[in-house]
Length: 125
Image 1 (tube, rainbow, N blue to C red):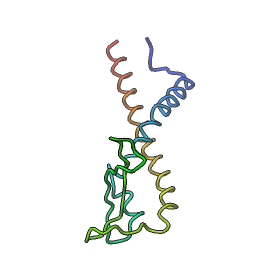
Image 2: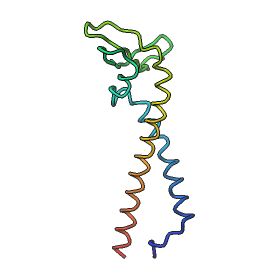
Image 3: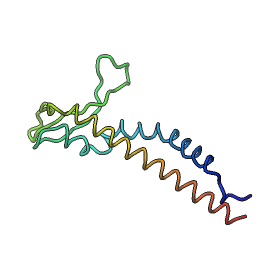
Image 4: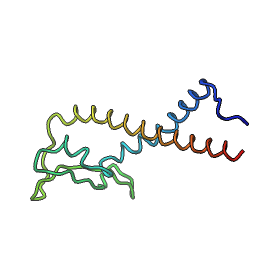
């Protein structure tokens, strides 16, 4: 089977499929970004001299065993400090940039995996 001459239409379909598969993983990375990389959020949300502290909180509307992720700006004494006033506007822009970066990275990793897989299959035959 000849795998080197893949028509452009099939390649575009493959890239579209990979993009569709990458969407949920990208959304997961974005939702977990305050836990994975709090410094990405901290710079734009918290005033200078404070840091972002994340944790799990059981609110009154949660079912037993359910928790909500919370994030607060905390100063050196451990006091909660209000967020920066424009943090919501800046957050949307950075959210979109972070989404694009995560999405492209996941698609590229999947594309490389398929390229190596098809290359090794072609060498075996």
